Length: 338
View 1: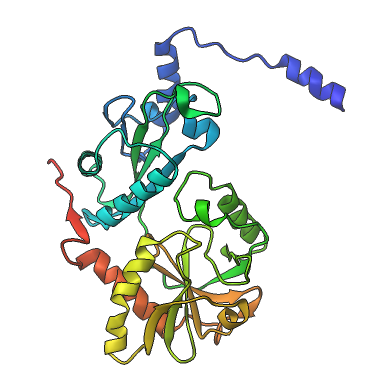
View 2: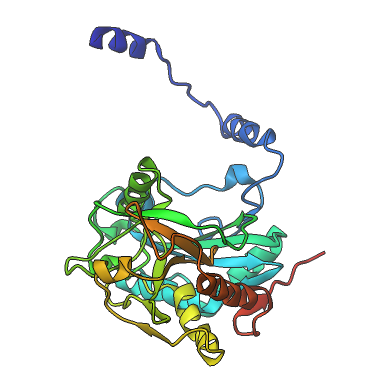
């Protein structure tokens, strides 16, 4: 069998592109059959501008982020022509960069301006704006000493996401979670997150839940998690060992409105054991594009009565309303050119 495979391998001949124009033709051919481009615009500090041609949305193979994972990223939502919570995400982005020892090639004000201009150039009204800081290109060594300048990349991703109201099933992940140093910075090493998601999908679940080494609830693969007790307390795990979710923090700011209405008793962050969490009345994932995703089953056991809870939907409505009609600091009108 091995001999047959070796022979077949010898029959394969890799094409050598004789010119850049031939390569460009090949790249454009890939996108010519795509009716709607999923990535309407990209920014690259390597190119020094905004790119509208998806065939040219590339980064160098010798970028330290590519071959060593030395990079950080973050995301902002584009909804109805507005950027939602851009500034809080940008603040976290630069905190992550500082932990990763990456110095931005631009001050924060310039990064913000680039992202706003990129969103405008994309003409995208609904989607996500994702951006990265990398140690930059230079060589293939472990140390970034040979990378003269950090790189900044950003891309607009068209996405027709909707408010989530259907419940999902989750499992407890067997994939080890990141240590606090790496879990609290949004770095590009998402292999544990990917494996945790794949593990859940293989077992017929939507995603998974990480438990820390002390037996406390941590987070999902790329989302925070929240619980409503039978006493109507909203509890989110402390952020000291997990990523400080911008949407989760905004929910903690908005949820007291439900306390004022008498729907919730209290809102807090706390350590939660698995037994306490599984006995909750309601459970949910919290993340930018959800913004709240009800969880109705965990490890094949129902959460509460196994149905989507009223308070989960009420919390989702609070966040969604904030996303589509919230105050000026939360929403930035994109200056599209017509």
